[in-house]
Amino acid sequence: MRKPREASASVEAVPQKTTIRDVARAAGVGIGTISRVLNSSSQVSRETRARVLEAIRRLGFRPNAQARRILKRRSEIVCFLLSNRDFLHPFHARILQGVESYASSLKHHVLFAVLHYSPRVPAEKIDLPPVLQEHGLIDGIILAGTIYPNLLRRIESIHMPFVAFSNNVVGTDGEQHYDQVGFDDFNGTLQATRYLIEQGHRLIGFAGDTSYPWIQRRFDGYRRAIRESKLKSISILPQNPDGFVDFGRKSALRILSRQPRPTAVVTGNDETAYALWLSLRRQGVKVPEEISLVGFDDREEAVLMDPPLSTVRVHKEEIGETCMKMLLERLHHPQMAFSHRILPTEFVVRGTVLHL
Image 1 (tube, rainbow, N blue to C red):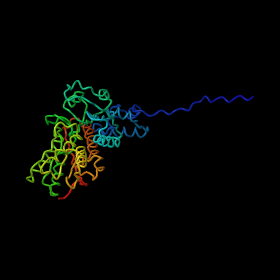
Image 2: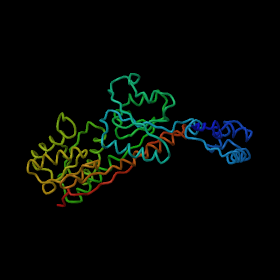
Image 3: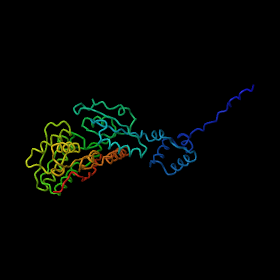
Image 4: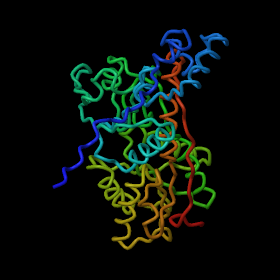
């Protein structure tokens, strides 16, 4: 009987990868100098840089992702923190999409976290998600959702760079001590109301819960357009609404009870516009034949209405992209002055506005 052949005892040697220490020895410099060369620092002489690059080329050195993070002293991970909103709020989901898209183009990563807290709780008592409390795990934070001053103070206390979505910051003194990105509430409604006036409307109401500062800014834009044309503002402000949809329903009753009845209504957001449209429809009132209607936000549902809703478009993905860009600027230039960027909005005319 033939004996089975013995397995070969020889093992093929695995070539060792070139390390940063190998490059440092070959170039006759320290590891810190290699780091500065890889990060394009201006603190390295031309001769030293050339020597390091030659050693990198000759040894075939390729820093892996973890090594690059160590060299840069960054994780290349940011956190998108959604506060006091449902998971995931449609509007903020689109902002997150913009953040993630731009981050991934630069090989950065985005972690998502949710935080619910009371605006009355002391800042130091806010229990931040563990991802924010682990030192060195993330580079910075993008704050979205409804943001109260106590959360801003809490984030500042952990010395973490952050950018806030400014439209939903509530209750601050107006002073700017942090980076912000937002969109133009005021001019969005100003342009929409001007358009209604151009179409011949003279009795134009505003239906929006102005207890929210962003709705108040939209109301201010509406009033500016009304004053410009020497018209009378019509505020449709139901008491004690249970959310924007309930506000829209109650607004319909207020509108139908008014004499004379408005020929057009500007709403604080698309949710209010949708509920108002549905309530008017159930009462047999035709939009736009009897009442023209304008929303704000341009949510996906706007085009599903019949007719599709004329509304102010907010470029949500662009907000997210700008937030990510600003956070990276802060990481690269920690001492730069705080910035507040306001992105323009766009009035989109669809089927709910009638020319008189």
